[in-house]
Length: 91
Image (tube, rainbow, N blue to C red; front, top):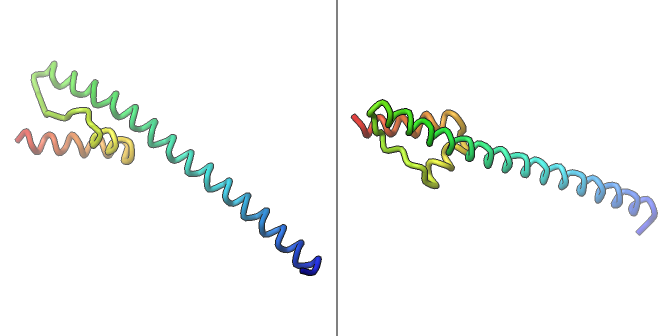
């Protein structure tokens, strides 16, 4: 392989490594966001359920993998959807 092609291959390899590191960083950031939203969503479900129970309303929204992942992936709209389904079932 001529020296010109070795230099080009080295530059391409370095660019590929840098892009790979950037992709891993974005994936890690996304995963951390989902985990944090899941934790906060679970806490929110707990307190909302307690507040509704104090008011004498039982919607039956439990803390389970489906509700935790829904709040983790969708955030506040996911919580609203879970409670919307609970209200629909309550009626």
